[in-house]
Image (tube, rainbow, N blue to C red; front, side, top):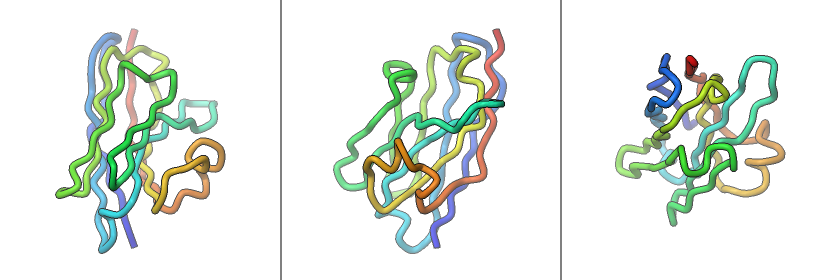
Length: 126
């Protein structure tokens, strides 16, 4: 069973940066596509970014493209989300997720992804 632990959330001023980490543990953790979602208060959870295991291809929501960068360290089974130029609209609980493959499910049926972390809050003050 793969488990995910997120760290790195916190409070930052608008225009600032944060880096989130998500460490995966478990026998097959290294074979998973991994990514980030976020859920703001009163809103639905939304896809933020994902990265595949083998090729390391990355995918981003339009709202974060050019500001956020996802990366992974396969040796450590860890992914990172570097968030720059943060604005108050980025305030949310950020969740790490993992699945054996990357596809449309990440965008449309994310509730079916295999593994979820507990979430880490990010607050951007204006």
